[in-house]
Image (cartoon, rainbow, N blue to C red; front, top):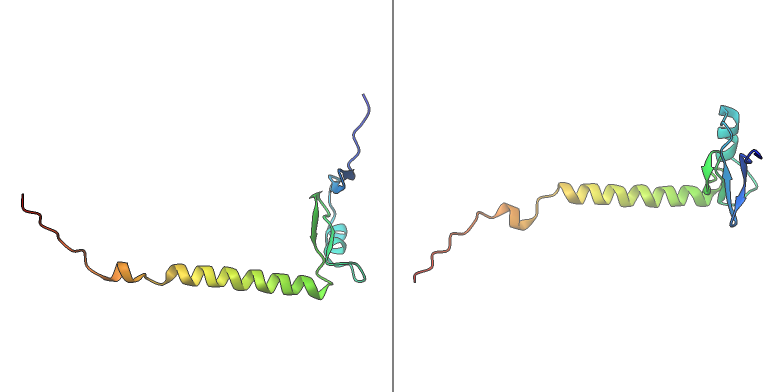
Length: 91
């Protein structure tokens, strides 16, 4: 039986299942002169190129949205501050 390749493309999506090394991991996330998205060092698809200023904008927006979501969930809602109301119905 033929051995399957560890890296390549499938339907235009890159994949790489070779055992990653520290040098390959670091060089994959920092590629000056390349676009915002680069091939992942391990797995399927693309990842952010941290040498691109556009990637930092994306990370800042994502961090701001996460902060906003977490701070909004900690604030009590108005309905939680009010005491429950007892309703009596006569038949």
